[in-house]
Amino acid sequence: MTTTTTVTVKLSRSNRIYRSSEPVEGKIVIKSPNSISHQAIRLSVNGSVNLQVRGGSAGVIESFYGVIKPIQIVKKTIQVRSSGRIPPGTTEIPFSVNLRESGESIAEKFYETFHGTNINIQYLLTVDIPRGYLHKPLSATMEFIIESGRVDLPERPLPPEMVIFYITQDTQRHPLLPEIKSGGFRVTGKLATQCSLQDPLSGELTVEASSVPITSIDIHLLRVESIIVGERIVTETSLIQSTQIADGDVCRKMTLPIYVLLPRLLMCPSIFAGPFSVEFKVCITISFKSKLAKAQPKSDPTAPRLWMALERLPLELVRTKRDQFSC
Image 1 (cartoon, one colour):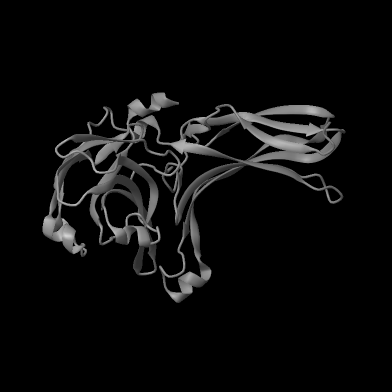
Image 2 (cartoon, rainbow, N blue to C red; image 1 turned 90 degrees about the horizontal axis):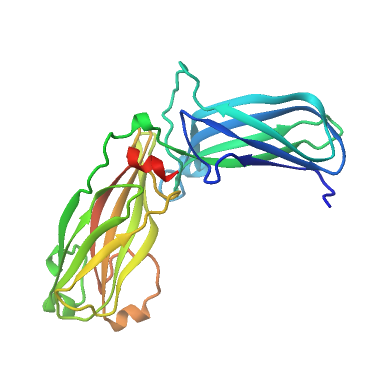
């Protein structure tokens, strides 16, 4: 049996995905063992772009403050109920709030939800129930996800834009082990560098030749976050996820498929806004057999190593109207 009063927010959609043109609907669920009084029940919507510069990436002043002033996308509060009493047991109060009113001028675009290292685009619903000076107020917060509205999307699905690549000892900008450099290797393939967020990253790869045995071939997704700080642009690249497509010394001249699912909250359509940008890259790494690799501690899997070959390709992510049916 509940001994304390609790309040939660339950959205109408289990996936919590909405467009900016749609009302966000749901219920405020209050569970209380006793009847309680309140001054009002208010629902707030707050959407913002939170920018943060970590120490070492910026100057002394920026590192001291750490967080740059957020960019406000939407901020509004509605009163769901006026002052009164809530009976004992479970009380469900429906709500509906419009993110964008018709004819309302919006200072900022409704960017899609994104959780990065230095850039976070987040939309929150907060319920506040003040109860006077002698009682602790009740509150609850729920994050909901914003995706691009249909009017902002391309009419037709975009076909993947395939780029042909090749990786050899001569394309590497970092030093390689002598046996890898002298023996040589050649890896060719093609990869989609523009694709829909609902589609997997696809392509293929072939090891044409390699004198040194291969131990692993991996596909790494990277995000590139850039923030304008004063008169400078602070850029940081970080790893999102890694997918191994080959384990061990693969057969020569055999085509390997590339099929990587994109994580929803960690990726979004590529953004090029005024004060910030969010871009993505694909890093293909080929690890060769070496005793030195076993002795070195594992850290950044995309950092240049003597026993590794790298190839980085830009990745443009878009959302199309076909993606809308996923919800």
